Length: 155
Ligand SMILES: CC(C)(COP(=O)(O)OP(=O)(O)OC[C@H]1O[C@@H](n2cnc3c(N)ncnc32)[C@H](O)[C@@H]1OP(=O)(O)O)[C@@H](O)C(=O)NCCC(=O)NCCS
Image (cartoon, rainbow, N blue to C red):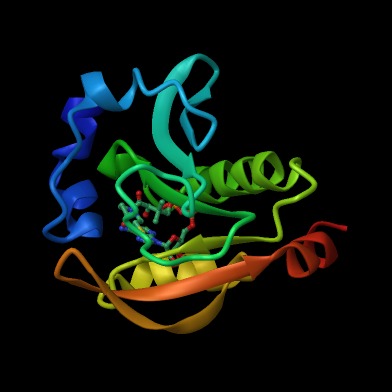
């Protein structure tokens, strides 16, 4: 299912030239720096979020990054399901899951700079811009939601 979802054009567009993972390997990683989650509505799978600890994740995709962060990737599987609020609800649940660990001080993201829809979506959730960084040849907007901002906004 994830193999199919991740190759759909609207999903691949959100990841630029980043190749989809080998899902058999990805989903059998049994480490505490990796938390893959499928979102369901009434038992129907609708999207995917991967939560990682970017300082400890094995490929060091995020490079030299502080401890006590989480980083997320998200996509909604069906193009027909975009814009219905599912992504927002998935993010609210995922952020609560991240900040449930008391040592986590912020969540970071790296949307492509030209993924304006996703950037607006993250801004509305309270993420702030931290600058532009190139990851694996893709120009990304680095964004961060601190625990303080998350707590204020979810109070
Ligand atoms: C980004 C994403 C997860 C948002 O989920 P969603 O369920 O569409 O979002 P919601 O319905 O909760 O919120 C709608 C907002 O999402 C944003 N959005 C981003 N891409 C969108 C799209 N293709 N269609 C509709 N809304 C989109 C917009 O800001 C939109 O707000 P608007 O109506 O004011 O334009 C989803 O669009 C997606 O999976 N995109 C493809 C993969 C991707 O780009 N992932 C992010 C990688 S950093």
